[in-house]
Structures are given as C-alpha cells and as structure tokens.
Image 1: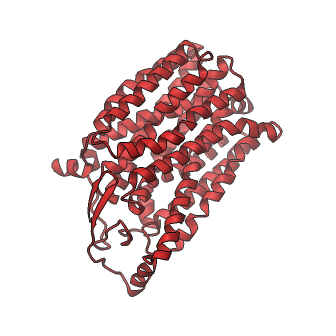
Image 2 (image 1 turned 90 degrees about the horizontal axis):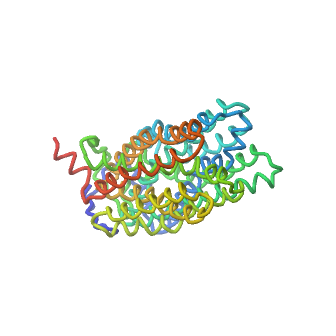
Image 3 (image 1 turned 180 degrees about the vertical axis):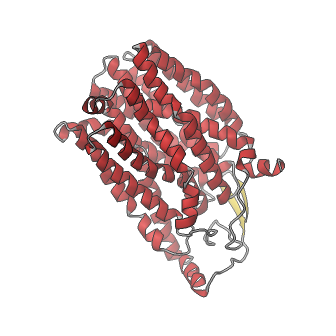
Length: 445
C-alpha cells in the first residue's frame, strides 16, 4: 500500500487486488457501486456517532452519583478511588486485545459486541447488591468501551483516509456530547425515577442497545474494510489493496514518538478520569448542591463538543501540534489553581477551563492517525498508545481517593493534578513532532 497524506488530502496509488474467489470478486464489485457505497458510508457515520456517544456515560453517570453509590454499597473513600481507577485498568487490559479480535472477527463485529457488553454491564451493575458485583459488572461495560476506543481511529483511517481530522472531530464531538449528557442528566433522571440511584444508572443501557443496530448490516456485508477478518481492506474509495497478505507488524516499541504519544495519552487520561470521578464531589464538598455539581461536571464535559471538532481539524493543518498541547496545559493549570483557591466562588470558570484542558483527548486521537502512514500502523499505534497510556493512568484516580481520605481535604489531590500537567505538556510536545512510527521503527533496525 502506498498512501501519501498531507493534512486532510490523500493521494492514492491503486494496484490490482488479489481475489480469493470469484464470489469475493463479485461481492466487492457490488460494494463499489455508488448506491451501495453511499448507504454504507452513511451507516458507518451513524455507527461511529452512536458508538462514541456510549464511550463515557458508564463513567460519568457513576461519577455524578458517586456519593449515593458509596452510601448504598458502603464504600470507603479508598474503595471509591479504586472505582474511579477501574476504567483505565480495563482499557489497558482489554484494549490491547482489540486489533487481534478485529483481525479474527472483523471491525464491525467487534464494535457491535462491544456495544452489547456496555449495555449488559450497565443493566447488571446497579442491581449487583455488593461492591464486588458492582465492580465486576462495571468491568464488563468497560471491556466493551475499551475495544471500541482502540478501533474507532482504525475505522476512521480505513473508511475515511482523506478525512481523518474531520471524522476524528465528529467522533470526538459525539463522545464529548455523550459524556456531558450523562453527567448533566443522571441526577435529574434519578429524581424523575423516584430517587433510585440504581434506576438512574441502568437507564444508560438503552443508548448502548441502540448503538448495536448500525453495525449489524456491516457485519453481514462481506468484503468491506469493516467486515474483513484477517484480510487487508477491500479496494473502496480512498483505500488501496495489493493483496490479502497482512503486512508484517511494526516494532512499535522502537519508536520514540509511539512512547511519547503513549505517555501523553496516559497523563491526559489520568486528568480526565480524576475529573470525571471526583470533580462533582470536589464541588459538593465546597458547598455546591448536588444538582449544580452535576451541571458543573457536565459543563466541563460539554466543552469538548465544539472543541473536539475544531482541534482535530486544526491539528491536521499544523506541522507540529506542540502549540495546541501547551495551550491546553495552561488552561489546566489555571483551572486547578481556581479549584484550590476558590472552588465554589469561581466554580463555573474552573469548569470551563478544565473542560478546555480535557480536549487533550481528541488531540491525542488525532495524533494517533497522523503519526502512522497506514491503517495497519494506526491499529498498532492506537492499541499501544491507548493500552500503555491507560496503564499509566491507573494510579492517578486511586491516589486522589487515598489522599482525600487521609488528608481530610482536597488541597493535596488538586496539587497532584496540577503537578501532572508538567510532564503531560512535555511529552505532548514530543508526540506532536512531524514524523511517523513506521520511519522510526525502520531506522532502529
């Protein structure tokens, strides 16, 4: 495959595909007709948006009701910190499996199964009746989120190779919208359902059930880049296939950019999961009512809706993404300083600043697509950066819970959050340099 990318423009050189059978050839020919291609493209876009909407409600809904969950299950502050560390742990453990599962069963099948796992976990966990059961059911939902997290950049790269920035922006915007909606609506929905925190958490399973639907026709549509299992993508618009032979895996650990991107991903994830798990509690402890605290968390999350669309498009037009990393880091410093000095007095301003800072996530996803030239390279880099990054992020939320419980306040936890911004900016600047993991891995042989 030879693909030359410059920003959002892609020039493709196509060579004849190797057909495994006449039936495969006929199927691929049918899929390349304009009418079929058009409806499949629309279906992929719908699937991407619905999937993205489901990638954070499992986390922010429990964050909005953390106090009720703790009281209902008898959790200590340290155990609650463990709960906020479960998402990155699951993302690290299960995310690394995503490329192998996709090669075996196809991208669409794995994402559909992921949405089903999310729905199942969200239905079961509120009624598990114990802390252990709650954590296990949460892990089931997070397993579905983990594989979808890793595969979304791969789907964007394979289906929209000439629109990586705009499609990553759409995906990130939908993800931020789902995050913010769950944060803002969980408390009011719980009240509308009679004050039951179990019902308030379980209701989000319905959204996951809807997200399964658009992937099912793509699983059945043989010969597409999303249904292929263990094969190169079929030659649809914007992709190239030189045969069914899968490219040799990269030695991804030899790339300094891959490591920088993994650490950047891990540190931004640390900040994000601390925010999602603890920010509402910080405001509530400062005297802010529970409903308002949920709205403040929603404001932080909703900032990602417009910015998640703008930042990836801007990033693909810059030769170096370092200036964006620095700007986001400065917003984070300002937000944490405000939380430390006047958490209730300037609550809305701190929520806005931290919402801007959390847009390091769509920037990291965009850099995953930009730091590799091929779909296979993106799959490996996405799995490596996300799995390694989430491993790095595991101690952060847990440490915040321990510091909060043993110090009796939020001063030390907030100081920790601000301190982690320094290495995040440094590695983000390194990850933003204009180079690819394929070139770096080859240079070290």
